[in-house]
Length: 406
Ligand code: HEM
Image (cartoon, rainbow, N blue to C red):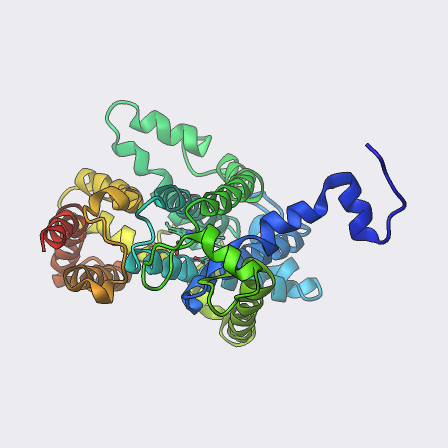
């Protein structure tokens, strides 16, 4: 290999690691459809939020103590009161954790609305769903760390879920907890998951998610099938107006950065003035295994699946099975949807109704997941939970088969 005197850093790197080729593949010759709106910026917002979570997490990690005797004070006293700007990092971390789920849900349902999980995009969808499941585990393990009342009792409820499995259930609960009860060993293993194993898995899944976007490319507002090679050729020949694609960088990302900037204004407004929505008041009381809170509920983003669990109030086992199914049901969407049509829901009347009823049901589940399970709440919860499963498993195939026949 001949190495010449370089005329700049890029040239120096190019001679050694072909950096120009890398930039081409990842940015300047990575083609994105022109006809996509701001809803396609959610992926980059998610990436930004994940980065914020990692950076703020590093700062919190400098003072956090994973020990049942020290954890609560290390968060609520050391980080919140003693360390300069500790409160800011904690608020950034908590608000980002809540917002990441809001944006994940928007990102997911945008994909459902536009049919972006079909026609060769199934693996993008599966990678995304795996991200959702691992993010859920990440949020749950993080919630345990301040070792407040909600941390403790949420851990007690969730780690007890495997007990319903016949035969091995009780042993499995003990194995997950590392003890007969929720104890120091439980906190330290969930700490390991939160700061080490799960972030590594998330990083790998994000890489997979991005890779899987390369071949089918992102969908567009009309579900139009674009010949990316032909359109890219037009773009490169200078016919930029005519071409249906633009480059990821500088064209697409500059627009995305604008949307991310607007989002960041909202984000820091929430961090500074409304951070409370991301923290439960009951969790400012230290964990106490002798005092069960009157009403145990998860953060808002888990309320819908929690209500699917609770909805079957007459049988914990049925509730548990329904809960397990609810966690992964969307994974099967590309196969439950029997129609090959890739188009926005507003151009698919039957599917449009299905979509908005699903969203309504999820909102009802979320609201009733927060209310105490008594009186009429139980009946509404049951109807919404059964409705959810029927709507996804039965109504979607029926609606999309009918759509195909039209
Ligand atoms: C931290 C988590 C995630 C990150 C960083 C991420 C990132 C991205 C990015 C950058 C894109 C391309 C642009 C866009 O459509 O926004 C994308 C597309 C996509 N993502 Fe995600 N995503 C995440 C989670 C998810 C989840 C939970 C799902 C669904 C279960 C999902 C499903 C999809 C699909 C189907 C597309 C293709 C959209 C299209 O073709 O129009 N992603 N993602």
